[in-house]
Length: 386
Image 1: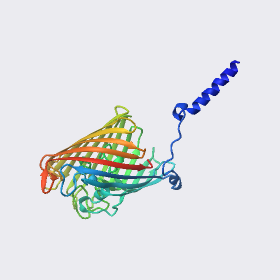
Image 2: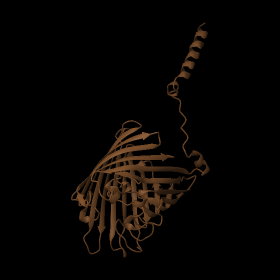
Image 3: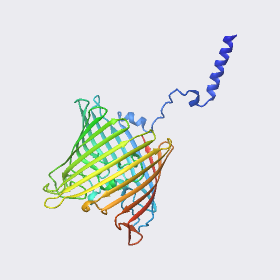
């Protein structure tokens, strides 16, 4: 009798579990991951990873510039209209000791690529190639990786793709204090879970050919190269420090020199709160003339309210010593961005930004100038394959 009663209770529990939602019926069971949009193609490509994203936005500028251009935010400069920030396709095959050959090919289209590839008014021969390089891992220690080709700069906290940042717009420090990309040779080595290193030998800043070597400077056929290194240190899981140094000539004859020091620190005090800081110091050393320097600093914070909602803020300050940058002597920004994840692959961000210049600088109306600028952006970013 007891056995029958036990059997009846067991059958009843099984039937009850079958009527419950999956998460309640088996809390400890692992739900199989949904297949990615490119999983089948990845198998065909021999293990290479294909990703894609599309980034569009609507911009508003309270100054109503007659040109319709918010020029301090060139990736998303259109005001009172829709704009295409970036469409990107990337094919990536990572390297390991077992599979030492790899590559990355990343194609981009839109306003972001137009800006990145048109520095100083010189259109790059690889205009739509955001990154393109071959990789080889030499069997030395944990593996010494070499990349040859074009890659984005190691400097700075923010990146070209909106999906890789905390806010929708990129800050004034991103556009002015650091380069976008380099072309040359990069070496990478991971010592352990705390220390890793990079070394660089490139044709300069923001150029494929050796025709200019620094930001906002141009010169024919520079013989010198830009060199540099990066040191990455993670003392504990919640803290990471990244130090980058780049140095190289700016003019023919290699008599004028550019030096950039970039420090980025990220801290995750809790599972929901993340903060980051960036500091940049750049020295332009001219033969027979005083040095020209600028310093830039930025602070970031992000709070993950829940898996779909988050809020991020950013503050920036640039001290433009001697006018090395196309900005006023002092420049600040305050930015806040609200993010909502839609349907898993679609990121939406609503952003307010306030820029302050130390003198009249921003276009206002027809023919006017203002020392402050308020902008609002609504951005939508579709990300596939990540």
